[in-house]
Structure formats: structure tokens, C-alpha cells
Length: 468
Image 1 (cartoon, rainbow, N blue to C red):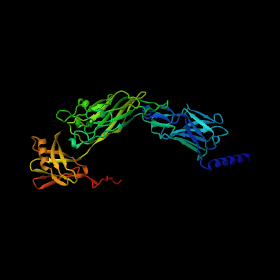
Image 2: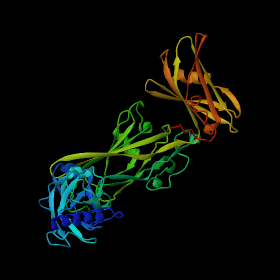
Image 3: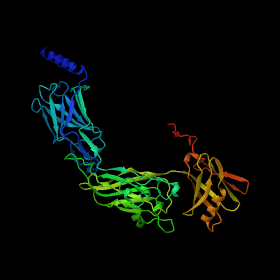
């Protein structure tokens, strides 16, 4: 009879513990936030990495044999034979049972259990290092009663105790922002540079400053003592865009790295090179970089090379070494862009040859008389020619002067395909161009250019936003 009464009493206690209001334990982590290197963890692979001390304060009463789970979703836990559990009640009150997906299972061993407000400290928990990179940085605690099904009677979490961050970053401090001046024949910018070091150039209207800051240690972060970290062995920055203005006095079809000394000024701790196509500048550094070190310099155009608007694209790649392996990581970054204070229309295709004629008209709807120029692209070279005045509020025939310019570009060639860039000293919204060609007087082929190929919204002041 006594045996039956004991069972009833225990069942009643369990029901009372699991049927009340929601319980909320708390999880604290010594030294929060504790930072771990993303790159160091990645290189560590399956090696054991020790976590900070985790303390749980119970938000509900627990009885002997109730289960306690400490989990960090995404990690691969290492069996906790080296872990120590110290509690504020009952001596050896909680014992380790096994690992579970993403964490560890412990069990209340104290005969008297625990009461709300009691605490347990978990020291020396370890995970496979690389697995911590894919975790969500959240440490979860859950307690459940020892029965089937096991009802959860207490829980809590901590989202700040462990933070996995990259050691590497790049921040543009001053982006390229030159405005190409059509009234200076696109040989310089509208305004003199005011930001150092470009502001100190002899011709500051030909300079555009680009300053950036690199970090290889998480911007001065002190990482948790057990976090593996990496040592930087190399850095390579690339900037992609139109670098035709770097080319010197040769045939104008290739760029040499020797030409950069007069065009890319500064960045003394980097070695600058350029590809033959004048499209990619590479800045290479083999040594480490000081914390938060700014890198300053500027682009200096020659004043004799024609400039084109371009949206520069940047990438950076770091190589590094850990305790026994090497790795690399990269980031995209924005070096800035060059714009223009006039209108430009690009005719991507125009044929020349026997029985082929061209039809090119420019409409100027504005109040400003504009000058027009043409850049003819043919066989790897660029030929620039003036096209004359484009009067305000008129439609102007450009076929004749474009034909003359193209004849110079083709030279001895009797036929070929060219691309034509038209530039006008007028606001972009005021200029529209019609382009076509005629074969044998019977077949007219309209050429879609960047003027008549624009959206309905062009010139209205409202950007076109496609529907999702």
C-alpha cells in the first residue's frame, strides 16, 4: 500500500512541474562576447576547440534523473570526458551521459534534485573546430523529465557568448568619384581633387583619390584564447574597369606595368601591375598588414588620353597559414566609379563596305547647343573625330562626319565592322540618336543603340524598377 502511494505522489509531482506556466532558465557565458576566428576554425578541421565556461541557472525545479542538454546547433560535439560540471547544490549533482546532435546530454544525479535558482557551470566543453563555423552562435539549454515521452520543463539560450567572425575585411575610405569633363575633351575631371593624397597632385583636376583600409585580425579583435587564428602570408587586390588611359605612347593597344608608376600613385607597400588589355590593375602585397592600416593613393590621368565612364569593380584575396595548413579567402569591394557631365550614346555595331550606307541622326531637345565627337573602335584601335555642332531643339544628320571618321579608322581596309561612341556636351536627357544602315538602297537595318534601346522611363527622371 505504501508502494502504491509513493508512485501516486511522484506522478503528481511530475504533473505539477510540467503543467504550469512557461519556465525560463538563463544561460550566461563567461567573458561574453568571446570571439573565434572563422579562418582559424576552418583550418583546424576536426581538431578539438574548447568553448568558454557556460553557466545555467534553472528556471524550474528538477528531480533526480532529469536530463539536461547543452546544444549549439550545427557543431560536432566531442565526448565530454574532460569537461567539469560544478553545481550550487548537492555536490556531484549533475553527471555527463553522452553527446547528442549539436551538443551534450547531462543528468541530475543529486538525490534531492535542484530548485529554481540553482546553477551549474559547464567547463571544458569541446567541439570540432571547423563545425563551429557553421553554427548559429546560439547556445541552448533544455531540461526534460526522465520519462517517455520526455516533457521539457525548463529552457534558455544565449546568442552573444560565442561569436565567429572573419579576420579579414576591406573598407573603402575614399572611393573614386571623378566626373569626366566633356568641355575638357574628356581629358580631365570637372573639379580638382580635394581629398589627400590626390589633392596634392600638380594637376588636381586629373587626380582621383582612392583610399582603403584592410584588416587581417578582425579589426583589432582579441580572440578567445582557445581559438585558432591564422597568419596572413599574402594579399592581392584587383580593380577591374576601363584603364585605357594608362596606356602610354605606343600603338595604343596594350598596357605595360611600367606605365603604372606615373598613373597609379601611392600604395607604397603594394606592387602594382596591369594586364595587356588595360582592364585589370592588380595590387600585390606579400607581407602582413598592421591593424587598421590605411592605404592611400590616387589615379592620375595623363591629360592626353581620352577618358570613359566606368564603374570599377574590386576584389581582394588573402592567403594565410594556420597551425599546419594553408588557406585563402576573398571579398568583393567597391572602388567607386567615374561618371561624365555630358551625354554618351554607344552604337555597338555598324558595317562598312561596298553598297552599304549609314543613317545616323541626333536629336537635341534641350536649350544648349552641343558639340559632338565620335570614337570609332576598329581592329583594336580607337579613332576620335569631331562631328560638329548639334544645335538646340534640332535633329542633326551625323552620317557624313561619322563616315569620314570611320574611313580614317579603317585606313586601307575596304570593309569592316565598327563600334561608335558618340559624346555630346549636353545633358544626357536631352540627346537621342537614331542609327541604321542600308544595303544596296533597298534593305534598311535599324541598329539598336544605348539611346533608342533605353526604357520608356529614360528622360522622365523616374528610375525603371522591374516587377519582382
